[in-house]
Amino acid sequence: MAKTDVLVIRFAPDDRARLQRVADAAYLDVSAWARQQLLRAAADAEATLERPRTAAPARRPKRAR
Image: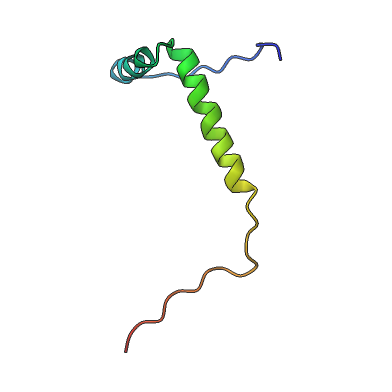
């Protein structure tokens, strides 16, 4: 797959520094680290979408008398 699309995300300087610290700890540049995190989050979200839903909503518990 060719890398043609670009996703621009704006961060405050403090947040950018936090991202840089965790990316450095993983020996990655910020964009590579962020790409990995986003793809993992997307995979997790897709997994929850694939779970079958029950037909009826969950019932509220009965209150004690």
